[in-house]
Length: 273
Image 1 (cartoon, rainbow, N blue to C red):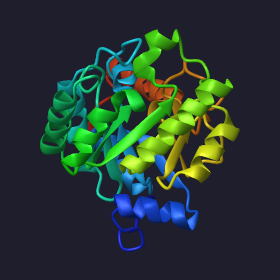
Image 2: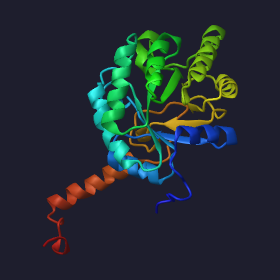
Image 3: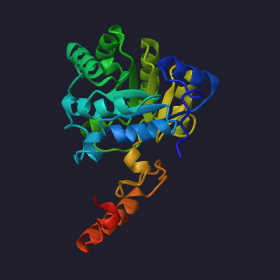
Image 4: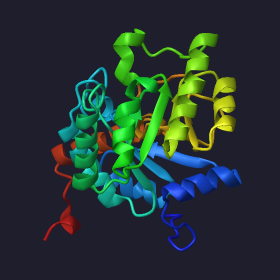
């Protein structure tokens, strides 16, 4: 049974997210990549839907997020934006479409906004992409920052380990978070960093901070939907809580379907015209 109540839960905007931080109301975020799932997520009361470049992994089968293109992201985001009625929809700018080229960054962000109906874009990095962020913000496009473990830089990091454990990297992250906040980013994602550091950053910036593997001291949390619903059996990091076992449910349902088809039990007499 749906818990969605449009009158009780008004449309989420950037100002509403800021208000939630001010009031201490936690922000529930999740990824989605298609119309049907976005509608379910939206009805459940999720505040922010991220059309993540994690689609490269969970929807396309790549080992990293690097191969996904802006055309791929636009295709996924179109469906999500149509399915979401209340949640704020953000789309990842994929690798290679904003780093080191502010003009390309703006063109990429404009394409996403015009072609998908989404309400903002997310970008990985700090001072090294400052000019690209500034160019996009200057066009009135909301930007969500992303610091800590940034999967588009997996080859630079050499893996997906916890980031900012040392003092130097931690201070750089704090400085970058403050820079993103001062520039006007509407939110900042902190991924896979020490909880104490994430709590400190959350307290020192005005923008809402969304954590993934960053402890409970942030303003909100985000997970990849296939992971938290148990559709992805092979992914079990420490930070990920599995809220369902849909892989098992789906497999059993499909097994019954195959059995019924082969036994000529489906369709039965009442399922025919």
